Length: 153
Image (tube, rainbow, N blue to C red):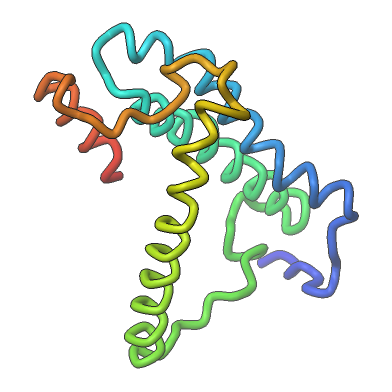
């Protein structure tokens, strides 16, 4: 069956920093390379971000977990390295989900003012395609369908 991981073992601070920042850095790098191509072909830049998630974030993060599983247990199985798998009580879901949605909306509203001011001031050097276009009327129906279907996965 393989040995279960030592749940008290922790990453070094450097490893934690790399494991938290490297996936985002790689996704941004992919986005910067692919977004101009996506926009030129009539898709919103959001589609490039979704592609970064599919082709960079998911493979990197699952690849790291499977590599750790093989190293620790000798098998490519996440069961040996993901210790917290207990189901939550349904009542806790009913309480937690609305609270998280409320705080997500609150943070989005508060940060939207900051987000609107950054392109014209601090980040004025970034090209227009770098920002998400919230006006989708200029894109074809098929481009929006492809983006929406991809985003729903």
